[in-house]
Image 1 (tube, one colour):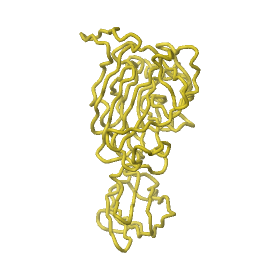
Image 2 (image 1 turned 180 degrees about the vertical axis):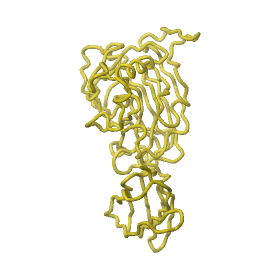
Image 3 (image 1 turned 90 degrees about the horizontal axis):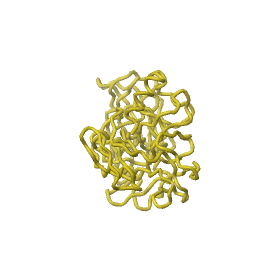
Length: 332
């Protein structure tokens, strides 16, 4: 429901606040970060009600009348974050798929982009947020949810246009402003129902902000989650812009004996590497000239590539049994 407020926010605060280092001191990931290697390629949405406490309530806009959210299309959630979004409605959900599965690598594995707005726009603590649970699956059927935590009070209802302190929420999407994603680390889920190294589907489920226990959403500790409610408009509920993948198996080579992973790709300054046994690693340019050659052991975690100019390189590993080559893109 924030499309009008996003415009006002830009006008009041100026574009200058949207630098990649913002918000300072958080784990927010900017949409242009080099650690993002891919985006969702398809999405299927199941809309929720505009007001789940009164499912007969309707809203009319642009010649459309409905009791469910209808703003945006699933295509708005595919591709890179661009400010175009799809609204889910109360308890609505959207399932996204990717060209290659996501795996549990070092640090965060993917980021979810919404369009929260700081309110007032001159500070970085209180924001108009609409929250969502994040779930993952290895088969599109069985899902595991990230353990969400809310320390926000749930005695007084957060109103339709009220702001709250975004730092009261953990493992909930939607707390950062437009173009900044909330990172999620697969290490934090149990991995009982899913293979954390083969995540094929990500599901985003709107949090119902209503603190009435009859309709409320609960965090992993059984606490009611209180956020802006109701938001009885076409843009009701969580507004998904995009999901960016950080650790993708498109950058992984697997044999029966070995597993090599290189990320991010494109890369800048540092190339992370995982191997299960010692290999020789060679980076060469497009002409075949060797730029870097070194022995890599299972204890190595990264390679300094800050000396490489932007361009396309070939990275090759050799463990005396298998040779693997892959294109590496280095950016400024």
